Image (cartoon, rainbow, N blue to C red; front, side):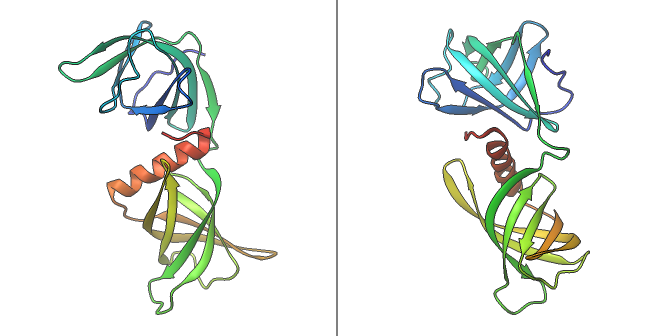
Length: 208
């Protein structure tokens, strides 16, 4: 397929340099010269993306992951460090579920707003940029109830302690417990970036 017409900012764009032990770098999309080139920013202190280097690209746009091969054709240091990529001849599109929801198993702790106790053990079984689904042995959570979710989110080779504000939207009994569908409440920009990175890594099987 052709390179998609980008009417909004990319969520993620990752480049892997061929022959460099699977090392990947995250870039920011700047623009497209239609049918000719893609322009991205170079990561700080990067020395890999030099003219002539062949790279494999993966990006999340909307609800899809796109992959393609290309090469670096130029690099410009001013006015900012920009990398010019050859326009890809072939782009492969991968659908990542309707709401970019990815399967996972991350241990978490449900903390009810009115609870004095330490909370309930839970497992995040899938997650999207807007919400998640929890598996619990039992819970008193009701649809519409606000709660906090504490967990350690693995991404970028590190583990990050996060605390999310959530709202339960549905509670469904299963044989060995309950499933709770929830959406996120207010989050910091840092928390949103961490979640996007985590979803990208889970969806593509790679890390930045």
